[in-house]
Image (cartoon, rainbow, N blue to C red):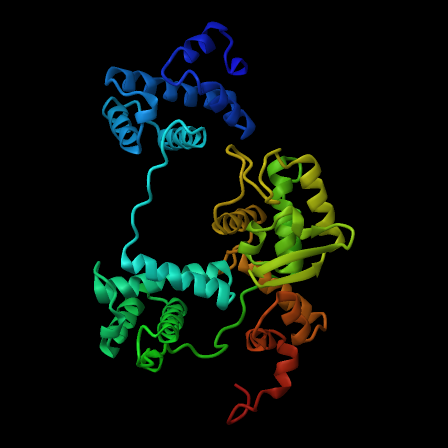
Length: 411
């Protein structure tokens, strides 16, 4: 702990407080996760202040509960001493004390019948259907909303579920979402849940057929991608002089050369990089792993980032935050943010600015270079060939001879 303070007496005073026996371990944890000196000192001061607050109330460490932490934070707020990160500091302290066996792990709140049913459905989707994690999350979101809509907070008696309940829920969600594609996800999730309920014997009538359909014309729009020149412009504006820039450069190359999904980049582990074979493994689900060749520039960018720019930490994720605490991204939203900022830096303003933009760009570039739809589907790892068919509309030169003459002559 001495590394955080110039005055040698400060660590001594810290060790004399209520949490004195644990501050050294806590300080070591902060240092290992890359917290700056000032941030670590502030966190240790919050812990010391908590110790004074507990001592004034005659509360010893083994009696500490999360309720005490909440009351302490309320007290800091009332005195205008609270900062946005105080809650995270105390959660970290409490987890350390639980790990050390000093305080008891608080029992989990008992799940409601609806929550238990949703958890069983999750296991079915993951283990028997083998769906991707992002798909499972989406299905559970709408399934939970369906159960709340039909049964409020009571026990979900699925045998009482009627067609009108299902139709009413889908109609309400479609109106709420204002997006046909999101509304279609609702119907897909509801059908999957009703199929599971029938499979489990929770309902005796097959209700899937009564789920309304959402009118989305097949392949009604063109894929939104960047041209090859725009992709190169995007990459050329990356700042490769900083550690952050080198990390983002490697991420953008994975998106632009291999067409990875944002979630696949987030989930990438060290074990997924086979340097000897020159391949990268993409875990699409618990039961499916695809292997793709690593292009030379992608491999060079990854090696440069891993050797010189990635902060040391215990995480096995390839890409991690560049600010403490050092850990992997919480969600794929971070990848979308990196792409949007890169587009802004390059002065590009496409209609859609998410990470999927570069995935579309890979497909359209391959098509224009003569790749078949089958080859594109293999690179993008589409399960359904129909998903790849939309890119057939991109090659306008090949489609132009198929157009019928305009009635009455050219306009």
